[in-house]
Image 1 (cartoon, rainbow, N blue to C red):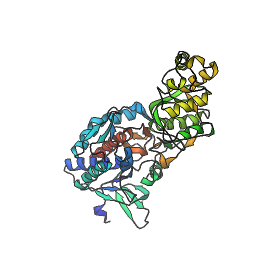
Image 2 (cartoon, rainbow, N blue to C red):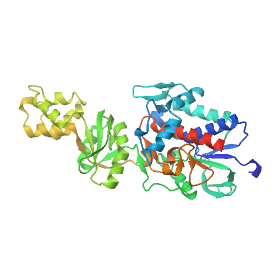
Image 3 (cartoon, rainbow, N blue to C red):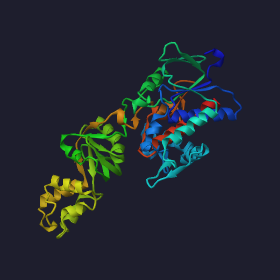
Image 4 (spheres, rainbow, N blue to C red):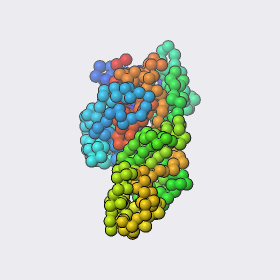
Length: 419
């Protein structure tokens, strides 16, 4: 590539954050009358895999109510600033401008009215093309060298190099590595002066049960609403999520267990006795026990079925040693109390999780203290911006991680174009 035509702005990673950063940079540059050359690189053969698989192929673009409390990361103050700078209303307006109308579902999640993730990806790629941004893929960056005049990018194909004045790093973390997010961005970030958090691990990931809780796998396919709690070894509640749970052949999946997964992993780093509890009934033990004592001629099975499906109700009765058909007024004290304890919070043996291949997002990454939240510019390397999952931010299921990508990408792209 002749030196006179090298990109003014190069964005590495064409996922949600990278596509947004490219569009924001292109709009800002064109709005200022600049003819800056903008190049978007991605190492994958297929662009936008995470967008296409999100929300069961429908793409949960964002959530109607988002704030920093729905996220974990280095700095909640930084997360708040970024989310406020480009909020949900901005996201809705942005996609509406691309011809993608979003609808809000009862859960608060926002999806395209077409119910097709391809609609979202096509709109983003169409705007990239309209703005004259060059999308090159597969073009995987193997190494980056910084000098006084900018950056030199070396590809996996050692014969290919590229110069750039300014860089935006949107390479993602390590979740869903088949999409191209395999941790390579961390190597680049370190080479440019950044650090990575001590721990990088899967978040929003299904959980594998251990031997003591194998009975849950016999309920594979069963789903219900439940409260999932992460508790310390001393019993202190560290996190709680109320949402749907799905029993599987390996353990637990669904929004509630997956939301809790990163908090269990983090807790066990400090306390190996940290445990997960499933609260099938949202009442304290004492109140459940009293209700069981007041059943009269009603059976415990009839009572438990008010809260959970029949198969699970029978399994819980069996675990407690309770005859499900016994009239409540004939229930022995100990089995009754055992059932009440199980309903209030079943201690669940979790042996691990399904790893990055099945995780929706990465916990850990570049600390937020190393970027300027007003611009997403690096505090460690002049001419570098960062956005998206490469940063130490992970949110709940429900569009929260996409909103972080849109917000941080928009700020980074707009800022790099003004620089």
